[in-house]
Amino acid sequence: MDVKVRYEIEFPINSSPQLLYQYISTPSGLSEWFADDVNSRGEFFTFIWNDSEEKARLASKKSGEKVKFKWVDTAGKDTEYFFELHILVDELTKDVSLMVIDFAEEEELEEASQLWENQISDLKHLLGSV
Image 1: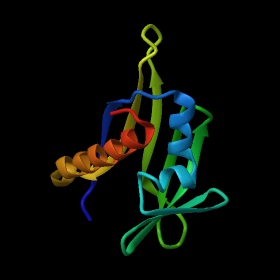
Image 2 (image 1 turned 120 degrees about the vertical axis):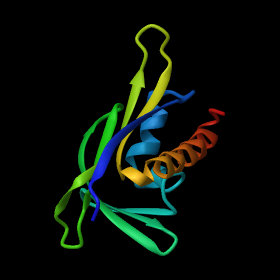
Image 3 (image 1 turned 30 degrees about the vertical axis):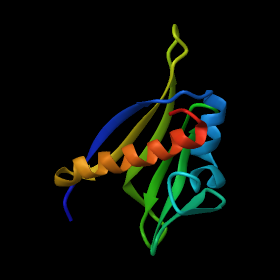
Image 4 (image 1 turned 180 degrees about the vertical axis):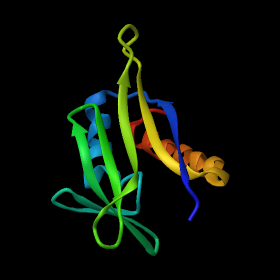
């Protein structure tokens, strides 16, 4: 298996941080834009897309600011990969943006970034931030 590289993308979002946090931290919020369905049992989240599902553990969260999901293997053990969604608020302008931190294989970086662009576009539509 190829080694994945970390990348970050920042998306400006016209929304209150509180509302945005609901969409990035709850199964119901995430299932509206990130995956077809999201289930949670305790700290474990199951993300479902079409016929595939991936499991992740909510590794950390800071209310109103960020969530970090660590992907787990079939035995339920943490892998070295995660994705983090971090709400940034500019001190002066109060502009809100969402920082995505994720991993992808080198040759799939562009495709992975495009996937996030599409998902964040869906999120912006939900928030009325287009």
